Amino acid sequence: MKRTGAGILTIAVIVGLVVGFLLDTSLTAMGRSTFVPAASLPTILALLAAVIVVLAIPVFRATRGRNTRPIDPFRAVRVAMLAKASSLLGAAAAGFAAGLIAFLVTRPVVPSIGSMGSIIATLVCAVILVVAGLVAEQLCTIRKDDDDDAPGNTPAGPVGI
Image 1: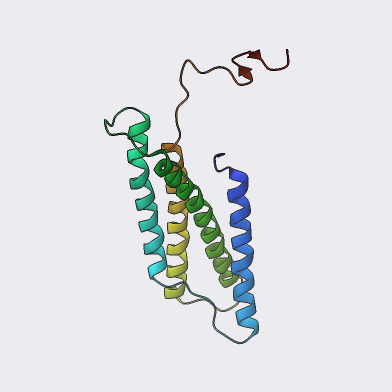
Image 2: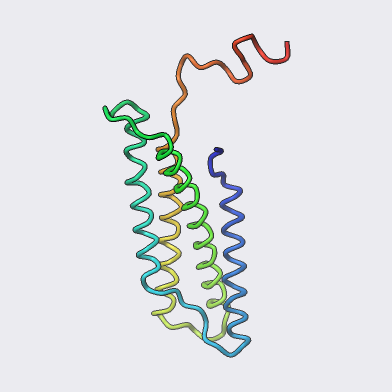
């Protein structure tokens, strides 16, 4: 599994931004009110961020030899994949909230404070989820042993000879 890179997170943010902006544009074109996320969404994103880090800590302790109880490798992989998925979800949600904000600030009518507050809270908690996902992914990595061969070396000798 490769680590989550800045490129894929940037793509998720851009896709979310475009979707958020186009959603509000289409709702307004149909004569409906703009989309405002539920007040529970930021709370759920923040709780998910906390749960991911809490799940990654035992994996970190087991890989660093600080825990006497062994950890199931499948559990470690599941936590790492959850961390990766959460960082992507957080990036997409942050982009979506940014798209909603971009739509609202480009309108001639000033939006209400309540709707902007919910969107800004969603944006902040989505960024927290991205950071938590990346931290948990880092906690789930196995450090390289000193006796590991250099890349490209096999027991029979270096590759290409």
